[in-house]
Image (cartoon, rainbow, N blue to C red):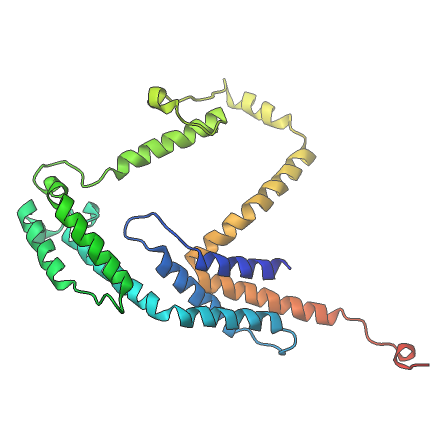
Length: 275
């Protein structure tokens, strides 16, 4: 049941994808992942009675894809508009550092381009709900905070966001939890600049400490660690290449069916006759 469980987990992960990354929408990626899963399931061959379970999963995946196809297209177009907004803002900055067309860039020029984009972006509220939500949020925030967003184009060295600062404090919190073993990171408010390192006098001392652990105990805990890491590694492969990962699962499922069929004992003559 391990293969079937992983297939169900892949489908469940596709319909519940989310993300907090800037300009990255989990709904689009989840829909594309479900498309790859359905494509891999459609390629599965074999007798109908042996692949009935996968056929039921395939029908359910096709039904979900067809039901949400129009919404997915609307979401893709909304994401394209979001990328156009990012392009007007020259975000992320590293993608436009060497651009020759951005010489003499200032806040007034960016404001004009954003106003022109706002005039072009006119979605249909009835048939394009995702684009309409994006348009309403875009217009509201641009009207309230538009001027405050443009200071970075006039002040040299001023970053357009605080992501680097948040990333730094995130790493500090992670190190604090790992070092102290506690969930709370309130101590970082007072000691956020401090780091704790554990050192040994020499490599020989470290080697002697490691050799104190029995080999059998190490192998037991190593297998436990591998079992604990298996789900995370599976989802990592699934997110990087869902089609290839699902094809591998389907192939394993087919190989297992062949193996089970080859181990079925033949029906004896005595058992075939009835009294």
